Length: 421
Image (cartoon, rainbow, N blue to C red; front, side, top):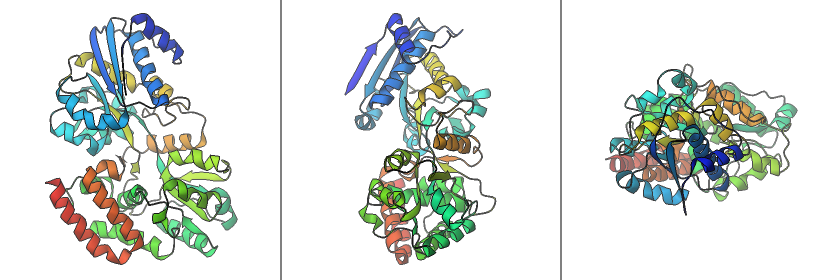
């Protein structure tokens, strides 16, 4: 479904007020047309996108804004076509390796100048995810944290504290297993949850740069570094850390194990908080901690899938497009669009504020102070689609048959040799 309008100045002003605030007019005088293509098609994101366009239009009354909203799945199949024909001035997409094909094809504009000065500091946590070949190719507008969500009441019952190291994590896990519970619930039927476990174990074992290079096809799967990651994972498997038959469950179907107290924790994104609250867990029972350190000296990178705006290289009004990108990442706009009644996620600007929600606050503090570690985009975004499928199949197989590791690594290297070429 496509929604297109060319809003009048009056309509933009009215919409901006209805969207929750006004922005003062910018000293920069922008004219002409600004064509924006967006995949924010679900109701709340769509209203957020329309509100942003309205507020930016209020700031620049001589600018004619044309906003086209395309269904998210359809957008993925159309983006390459509209980047080469009927090119917009601004387009939504994703960070890191998901933007690489369009950077390598010369279809995204280098916007490093947008990042100059104060913005570079305010957006430090996501700069790595927007950087390829030493240049920035877009701006982020929202992300959310991953981490370990755990039953605080069970930890208190067993006398456990939030672990800072993998050794502490293993010690906690042993006490949980000894109590008759599993350490982690998991639903790997749809594979991607196993990808999350690999992301964290590999980033904590080998660091963000190695992890990123591996998923970009620049490192071997059958390497000492990757084997060290799987050795750490094997330690958890051998002690019975995960629920049985996890390949039969979706992530949603795995949540009752945590809600009912049969498992003590889950490694997941913040999107799981709402269904866990709906299942009856209170914020006194449910808590969050950052996945602990494994290799000493390795910076703490995080999975924080990041949605982005880009300027196509064929854009007609790049001046207005760059001004829009700066507006999108401004602290005030970031606070507004990521509020609970809008996107309900985390602002990327460290000067923004977040809703009065326990988990959003913890995630914002963790990511905003975590710039040295890097922000990964999750296994199935950081790897090409075909490699992600083959890779996550191998990860799921390892969790069920860890003795197959040699064959799995050989298979992944063979697939990578074909796919990345």
